[in-house]
Image 1 (cartoon, one colour):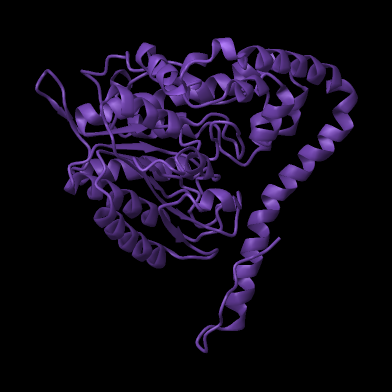
Image 2 (cartoon, rainbow, N blue to C red):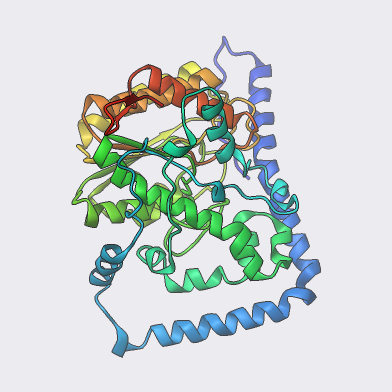
Length: 418
């Protein structure tokens, strides 16, 4: 394991160097402990899951071989467009609603197993409850998305990858929750993957609502570690990539900017759009933590590395500079903003030291960047591994409302601010 080099200035005492080193060790050891547990669990459980793995493998190879027959080959781009145009994910009527997308199916809860991962898998519902309890959101004004179907997912994902999710062992590896490997796959599909597919539907729909109303927030989504042929880091489906491909075809959009401000590198969408000039990627991340994907880093158009221990003031200064550069380099027709809150001070995986108010300022800066340029913006909430994340996200949305950066006019003529 390597750590970013730290240079001591004459004004920087030695104890600060030691603090940065301890934070980096603690941050990465949390994820490594989870992975080590998974590997040990799988080794002990092998006799129980071997038969299931064999059946899944048989189904996978038979499906792969049948789908690779030359006689059934169709131009990949034509097939993608066909799938997008026949999709129902843009169907939910949001004409009289606020462009905030959420379903009660987003939240993951099953016998406490979800608590074995540091991610707060109930944060999405808690965000909405905070907003409703304080009078900033009404339940009947929330947009309820559809589940992404297999045909929808095939717009980006390979058939082989989707088939691999029919094996609970693979899902356990992706979600980093070892006991998932022992569950029958039908239960994993229902309790784990279905909520993810519903959130994918929300991210895809958000682009349409953003183009119609100027902005949209999917209270879930932001699975930026997943690409078309692989998942990881609690990300099973590539919702950001799907959102963008749908926008290309259905919204006649040709230039998209991804602003990824999660503490972790967004290696999934970077792999998917590595050589696509229609997509500009600004990724501001901590290079000393997962996923250490050096190949994907080569695909980032604008890379801003913030080291372990970076504080609020320094983080916001770097963000201001990054947004200025991005605005001069690329003129997007849509912005997809991955607004992870794992940059918060105290987050067990992010390693940064940004305050709750710093997160609120960060989100305001990005929305103001979009508003000043009249660019529709989609926000997804992505990572965040503390219970306080939900409260911070809700407060940030309230701040965006108070600053006039998000609003919508409904047909009744009544202006609703969320």
